[in-house]
Image (cartoon, rainbow, N blue to C red):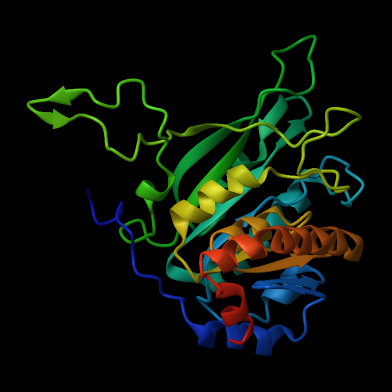
Length: 305
């Protein structure tokens, strides 16, 4: 296993970076266990953050397709805006940190019906792109003059291609067809499972009577926690700080709570912050007793940092 693929030591663990962030941003609108959410424009809020404070940023900004929570822009203006906030993410990312970006598709009049937005940004961002991850979500809208869309893209980016966190063993897929197959007396497959590959199969968060996902909130564009959970486990370590500049329904924060990470979110709409806050409070309430039995009181410890 290469140095890159091994578990790296975190550059942001410990109380001081968190104190620096608290001092920079003040009191969050929502504060649940080790999850903080701030109200405001992410460009303004991130400009106040200290350099290299975050091990990981995971986010999905508005796609500029006319949803209720966004103000549509001209394509050139939208890409310029993305370039600006991604530059701030780069500044606040630790030297061995990562940035995971999810974006949808845009129509380019006269050129493309559904062009992945990430493809229009790859040469405008300062990060090094490790890989494109395809999230295949199964159900979706039907199409009549093209194949029905069933995937979204993530770009996995890092600051330093020679030194970044990648905890493969934490996210191996145990569903191996021949787990005991050997070659020259040695197991061919890692006992923990196989590499999940660059195509991830996770169902969407659905809505509707008798078909809504258990984790469904009123937010109109909610990500499944399972997708973010894999990213958080693979690309950060325990007690690291994780940033989401477009917190939305709080999926990133919930994944961080589940994996002993400190999360900091930003959201321009207070009603969405309240949705996320209630969701996180419910998660904490439902898991406190189990963690107490396992003697892992990390929430209480981190609240005192």
